[in-house]
Image (tube, rainbow, N blue to C red):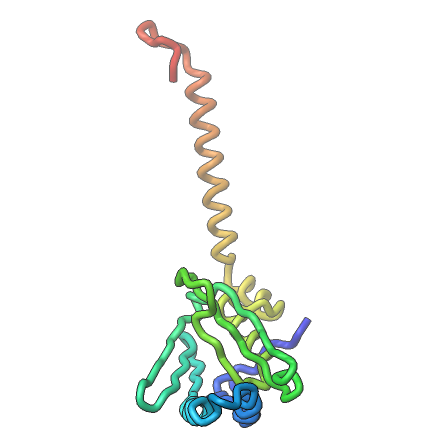
Length: 182
């Protein structure tokens, strides 16, 4: 089992790692005719990209002329994927793809240029599903029953009352005007 992610370290991540610029530069060399257009775009994207992890959610912004910002609450996160190609692995980078129930096929947010990608993934999973730490579970158990246990107890009580009502209806004698249907 992985140790719980260090929240302070995750909250401190504000920019992609500088190796992302190397990755952008190498990937732009694959299309030499587009280099004069692609390289400035990637340079501005790299230098304007910002991440912000808060207690409520995560935001990502980038752009100079056309600023784009995506904000996702942890409760909206449906799934998280890690993706890296050969060059990214060589540079020690990966992308964290965050999916929501927005209806689109792709990821709602892609956090690029992270070397702490596994810690970020674990942090996001802990925020979207609640803490899975056994020490946390014991402190919650000491505080009282979990909401799932309360719901299960309430449903068992409802089922018991319905069973008693059904048995009482079946045990009552039929009245003269009854057709026998309950």
